[in-house]
Amino acid sequence: MNDRSQATSDSAFVIAIDGPAASGKGTLSRRLAEEFGYAHLDTGLTYRAVGHALLQNDLPLDNEAVAVEIAKTIDLSKLDRAVLSDHAIGEAASIVAVMGSVRRALVDAQRKFSKTLPGTILDGRDIGTVVCPDANIKFYVVASPGVRAGRRFEEIVNNGGTAIYDDILRDIRTRDERDMGRKDSPLKPAGDAHLIDTSKMDIETAFQTAKAIVKKTLAV
Image (cartoon, rainbow, N blue to C red; front, top):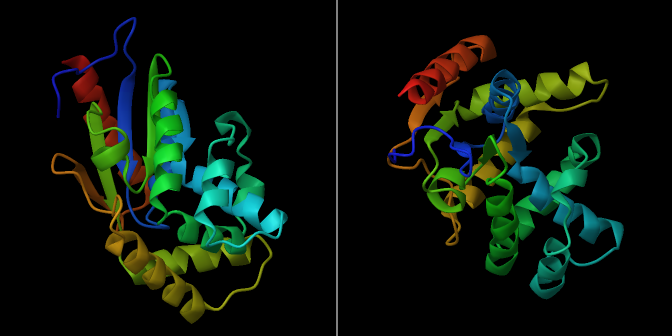
């Protein structure tokens, strides 16, 4: 952790939260943002926005030149979680996320967002390692693939959809392999990240654990 323990008039307090799909990092990030009054960005939505634009315009998902041009136009203030949460969009996002030029364009935008005062919380897969390596606090949220698949299954069913657990589990393992194995900004914990394993931890416990760490750091 760096020595910039709290925000100043011209410096935002930055919290980086990384982890695989359905680990609970998004919910944790939103809870912390609400608690401390910080701006929040789910960086995964930026990649989903690119994937969504490609699908909407019937463009090939493997066309990096087109994808990077779209990435440069994404408005971070207009990311609609409800629309971008579609499964097909998530798969498209996972494909474009391995493109180096797309990642660089979106990382630039994410870094600009991180400077929002008085503080920001960014969650994703490379925040603490690439996007904001000097973040004041870094968390890495994990859970077993089986637990994460179960959460995603329940979420879909509770929202009135239909799903097959084994298919979701297979998708999660495929995404993990793709995210962790890519050459550009692979998913991995930062060396100074606080590990939070939610496999046997409910969101309230995870939130209280993270909140205590943030409050302790802000008090320094």
